[in-house]
Length: 68
Ligand SMILES: [Zn+2]
Image 1 (cartoon, rainbow, N blue to C red):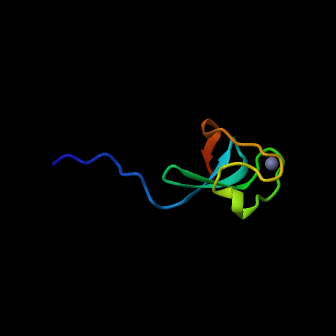
Image 2 (image 1 turned 30 degrees about the vertical axis):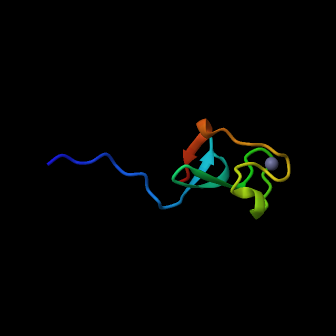
């Protein structure tokens, strides 16, 4: 019996962007909650679109780090 590859977790997890801002990642869906560029709390209606309501900054997924 071999182990199957680990499934994509449906559990949302908190992430930062190189230690700045805060977002929630569920599967491949990114919700930007605090902007890493301007540090504003993001508006809920655009958070799920993955960019900042205030400065329109869209963080790169390459910068994602797990929040501790
Ligand atoms: Zn911003």
